[in-house]
Amino acid sequence: MTDDPLKPATIAAQAAGHVDDLTRGVVPAIHPATTFLRDEAYATGPDGNVYSRSHAPNARMVEDVLARLEGAAETMVFPSGMAAVAAVFRTLPAGACVLVQSQIYWGTTAWIRDFCTRRDVTLIEVEASDTDAFTAACTAHRPALAWVETPSNPWLRIVDIAACAQAVHDAGGLLVADMTTVTPVLTRALDFGADLVMHSATKGLNGHSDVLAGALATRDGGSDTWAAIRADRDMAGAVLGPFEAWLLLRGMRTLPLRMERMSANAQALAEYLADHPRVEAVLYPGLPTHPGHDLAARQMCGGFGPLLSFVVRGGAEAALGAVGRLKLFHRATSLGGVESLVEHRHTIEPHTGIPEGLLRLSVGIEDAGDLRDDLAQALGQ
Ligand SMILES: *Cc1c(COP(=O)(O)O)cnc(C)c1O
Image (cartoon, rainbow, N blue to C red; front, side, top):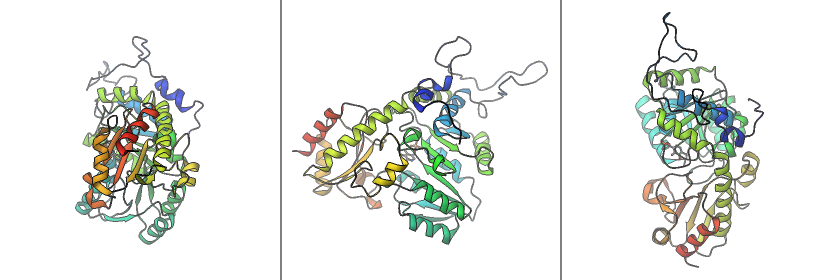
């Protein structure tokens, strides 16, 4: 791993030193050009730019900042998180076997199931927060690739990245970690042995609910898998546009500050809800009662993230009643933005075994007292 002399807050705030070289503006320019000049001898310019499907200056700036935050050899950005997921799975040969954590982000599960069926890839789903079950599945199936998500969305399960990396490496495969819910500010999965990290940059990395984007980071810039992903992006064209990349870079400048504040707010709300008579259970790794708390405390640094779920007593009716009374939390999907959101997940994914009374909060950067008061009035004291 790269040993960066600068801390994340400094790298992010200064966008890793990217300025506008032409005007000396402290903010880099947007480069919409799709094609780049060659000189009289037909040589490309100093950056080697030819065509923006392969050479996208704004995307490269984001990749540079993210690589430093992640401690990655290289990163690549994509036009959505799902495009990044797809880029990884498209490297698998037909007939391969993959291990995927059960009860993760529903969009990932649904797409992978469909892809594996169409591509003749054997899919094994396993509860990866159970390290023994994950290790046994690696030994039994020898997967080419294993996919985990920690903390998982919306169950907030914690996966032991180092133990899972060891297990899948012993079986000859790669570990990919979807770290969307916490970003590299709170957990750098490559440091724990993951081979690839995936992010929906739509969420915490951008943090302002106004850019759809995805990212991958690798510990090994020379691996065959990474080369295949890069070739696929260059040729199949899942490239992040310059305006989105510029906006993402702008959003990332405050990433460490936002993650710190969101985590502190989420912790305060989790503690409040844990004592609330109308609440049956709170799923938040920052609570000492959470089964993954000790592991999370070792693996995460600076907080336990913006995502928290809780189960309202009285099932779907009580939960939807409370949701309807909330005034500050927006009733909307997604997570990791500066504004707090609430979701009744059972309405979205009734078939996944999610409790009917479960509400998922993405806690923003508002005043924690205001958010607590809103929950208080909605739940009824
Ligand atoms: C949103 C999300 C994705 C998908 O990302 P998009 O940017 O919506 O395509 C993948 N994983 C997790 C954990 C997510 O929350």
